[in-house]
Length: 224
Image 1 (cartoon, rainbow, N blue to C red):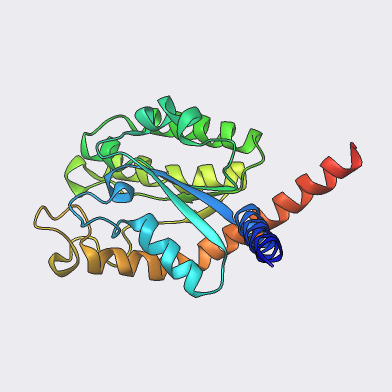
Image 2: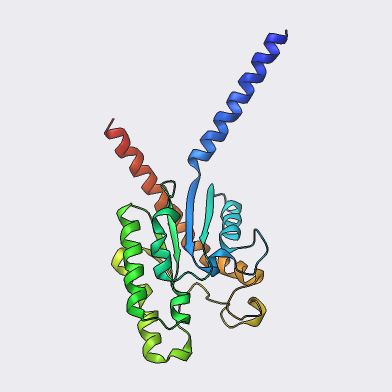
């Protein structure tokens, strides 16, 4: 009797482990590569953009994990420098949110463009679906700077065939009720609005990720 109970217990554990492994294998993993707007500067734990986005996607039935690869203060150059280790082999799709610090510091738009171009080129070479989140330059640098900087994102998205969310802070920029006292970073209400607005585009990203994973599976089978 003891042996029978032990056998049943072992089989139950094995089946549960198998189900967990299958669920993990089916989970799509999005890497959110960004700066403080992604990292969650000034927010309580679990309230950063990737965390809230993951909750929203799961509430809509998506088996997904959104990893926070945001580092406060990062420029496009810093994001490029850490790209290879920030986006590991387990990634299924990428959200790229970089450039705000370049614009705040008045760095040449051509440099930000070149860095983002390399980032998108490297990610595309890995067959990873990409969502590029756009940024806008502050008005204090003048119209010429603003026009050059703001054009970076739609131009690169078109060139690389990536999804584009034109302005990451759409609907919350300059609204004191939706930002921290510094006026630059979204508060919890602001993050919720960002997630609500970007969600349809992220769902398009997930669809591309599913198709890409299916293609990889077919290719792997054909080579066996």
